[in-house]
Length: 198
Image (tube, rainbow, N blue to C red; front, top):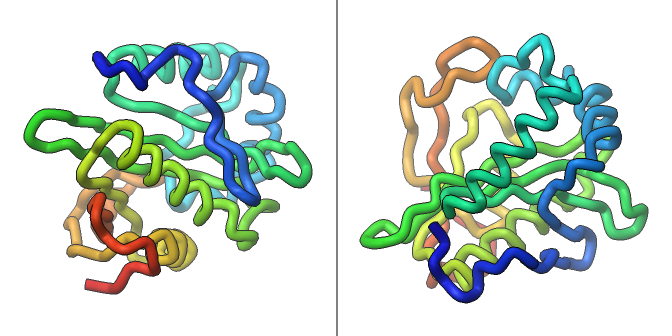
């Protein structure tokens, strides 16, 4: 559990120049399902295989329940990314696998709707979540993994100051196939500039 005074129920939104991040709410369903549905072909190559009920309201309720349970247990926190200029939902980012003690680490995963790509929104979101992880949660290390062919995700991570540390063989089952992933990481005292390839 988050037994720390800064982890309150009234977690504030994270605000940047282009985006605002906040926890998902039950009434975000319609906007979320529309954005995910219209971006399906764009997202599927980089995500676990979609279930037949992926965008159904029942599956959404279970997702929200899982977000809340993970947050209550202190293992993960999910944010939705809203474009500041339009106020529209643009994507999502999760800080998961949060570990304290000797590890003090977490793992970032994210997605963005196709029409919001290539605007720098995700890079800013990754930087905001990284700052939250280091400054508020007092984590020491944040990891992210991406498929080597996912040039967009590689650019996001490197612009956000992550460094490539190696190749994880057959790491995650993505769209029904076990895929190799590059491992990227950022340490709390790394400089804020672009990361470098390992």
